[in-house]
Image (cartoon, rainbow, N blue to C red):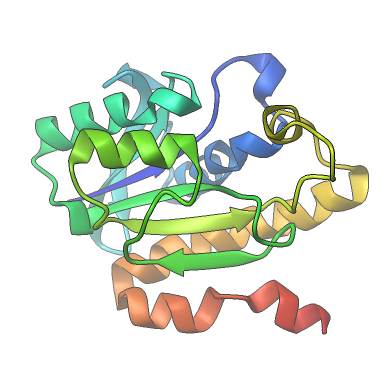
Length: 193
């Protein structure tokens, strides 16, 4: 069994912010799996189904970003999922908007949601799909930036990135991390060059 968690903040006022890219990817995965990810469980909105022939739990933690680990830990304990079968999807300011980066482990890299997940799981050994949201403008507060909205042009690019991130999750399940990294890491930048 796999847990795929997309990070974000609950509430209408946060729906279209840069910090909520994970929620958008979960919505696409739920649609592809033909399920609803709206059951309230594990301090999250969740849904269960099959992805690439594997039992998969989709999670959208409702704890607010900085406490995402509480929700992930609850689901991990309930379903007895090993860390290597957890995929976390989240925003990354060190990547260009729409660029993806797949990782098998690593530090939080300054992302408070991931930092909280590492603290609750006691390990950095879980899969990540990072979705680039672009670097914050000089002089702008980081919290203000991640809670800001994409421009119209960026939003169109991000819609494609959400679909690619959902594709990457499917490849992680069906073909493993090496194939996912090979196919999706830095892809957007290469295409634009």
